[in-house]
Length: 357
Image 1: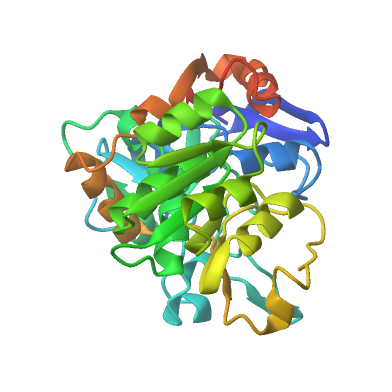
Image 2: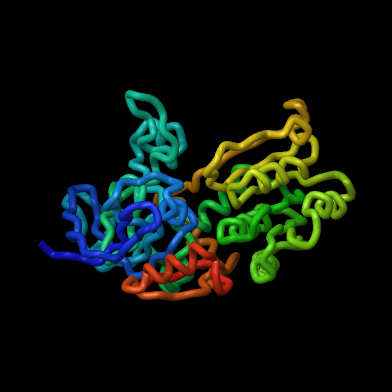
């Protein structure tokens, strides 16, 4: 049986590169030869044992590649075609999909409801930090890469761009809104860009790292706040003349940033939560106005599927946003354990790592 290299979850604290069989292709599947992928913050949660996955699973959910083999029932694509697939791979026919929430595809079970059912790569099926990845429901999930766009230009589309933009979209940002984005990691930076594209007239980026604050300005932030130097809540209220923001986007997944997002909202404002939380959250009474502030708290798992990918690549192709600068480091798949060590410890100003088999 033909083998491939793959980054495999062995147990908490250990993701190793090893050999696995190249997957067999079912009628509705496609085998993608991965040309570029990356490491996500969620992969680090898996590495640390903060998010449970099965031992032996191939990790990763952000593939760019070429169709190696198509299932017998797949139409509309050809072998050798450059494609991406979203981190979320909805089937298109489940109850969740038919309710318009493809990210939760497969979440319903006879024993109850489980969030994030649409996230399969590196969660419930083998992912794409490998030489090949099997894409399920290929006709719903493969999206051709436009001619002229490089792998790195579209590398953020499968997850980071889709997630960050969805934080702005779910919040219902209107023209002229003031938006604060807490944390300017890769998702926060995409949320900053998404807020600006959605019509916000003032976007405030908050972080503690100077290089991320500089990148936030490049992504469209009108003001940046170094939370290591000033109290971001006080500074945001000063910048807004005491009014507060229309929308706060939380992009880190901590109690401190979640609570800060609540505290800077205007009456009737929206907190859009994108962070992956590893402990229980508490909603402070005062910040929540005892439940009487007409606030809205909304959570979003990044939308997937081929139409979402097409739209995001269209934004890149039109020059409306350039996320290529977020790729700060590049490694071969053979060196992915070194890449994990760098990314998980946030050393050397890392934002995103491009991994090429």
